[in-house]
Image 1 (cartoon, rainbow, N blue to C red):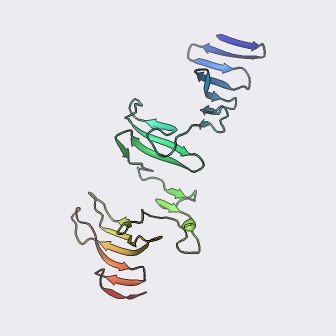
Image 2 (cartoon, helix red, strand yellow):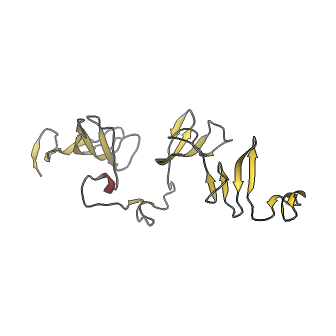
Length: 232
């Protein structure tokens, strides 16, 4: 036993037993670890561990600055040996703004981020008891209000840009059916038409074709974007 004694009632010690090694403070006091004359990690008497903070408020608190999405973040979980180029899950925060999670190979590529890949368990947003693969429990009484919109598929607002939802079995890079909003004017806050597309082919390289469109004025075109069948 190596014992560092401040007083008979206040000391810390390191102990090597036949099965393990132990580092303790004798009473309800924090244990600090540091380098370069600065504390880097703290264990409070209640068991909370802090990295970058001496006052951790949860079982593990990691404090630092990361900024927007990057290859470092504040926390990394890596494959391999933990080298910079290994695939990693990176977690970071932007002060007073948002938090982010990203899968990445530093300097190589951003990787896919998967939730429940084995197909068991649902994902809930604004709910703790999702009943489907993805349930978003957010609604309002007015159309087009962002704060009460459950799902927004947006873009940069460039003319001709399509924000879409795909349907059906996917092989290669094409989907058999889609519904999308196509920007028809990039002026101001933009305006869009709603388009419906399907694919009359089983070939996986064939893209779906537009079958119906509802224009921003309410006109409906079926079979051709240039043939109006009335308004609704």
